[in-house]
Image (cartoon, rainbow, N blue to C red; front, top):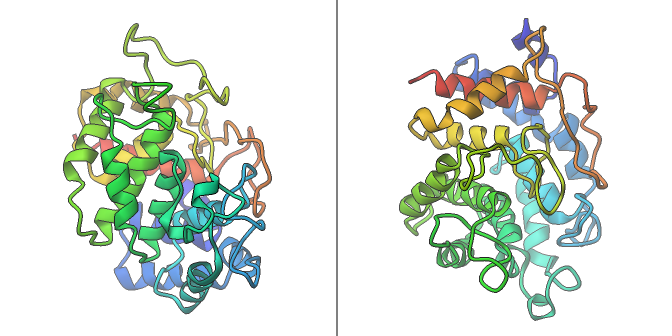
Length: 311
């Protein structure tokens, strides 16, 4: 069975399978989740943090192994933010990590969780910060002020583009959702609803002007109809579906084509392959190879399909 195969994976996969696919008792889910800090991918990531609080010798870099990227990944693994290991790691980041040398010069002295200037990067910082219990309200307020008229966000706004980007929008939406989940005091529901409509009006990956599928991202060349994990700043259709599922959005017909695409990507064995991997230095090897069955894609696809079946 596919679920048995998923449960043979890392604790980060297992606890989410128990919660999202198996409906296991909360105690069983919590017990499995606790293992993320001391076994497998989570333990390896925590052990690789330097004494100065950084990973990859930087607050952010272009190679996926920086402090921001590791915290983003740890949040997706589901490291318990209340665990002693998480608390110690986050305290080192708070005490030592700034944006010096990793962002615009005017942000050199910003503490890590204050972010920098680009909404794409700030969305990822705010998501991880909110997940790990940090007050990212100023960053959230900034992101809300940068929402464009069409409902999304774009790192190139306001000077180079007045239209939103799927890439930036998904990063910001994930941040707003995590902020809401952790009891943030700034209302974000209206902004999230507008951002979700931006995705759904474009059927999660179609050109608004022609209704045709967007073949590849303009900046990275990544095909949005190919599913990758980790996604970092990159959008793809499965990431959009998984966001809507986790946000508890009401499924509607605007998601039909995206769901049909996800179903079509399932192999004869019931598993989804890793369609693509974004070029760059990974902080750890997740053991998944392009063209081979992917536990991450399978988990996320099953979670999205179960959400959509509620129609």
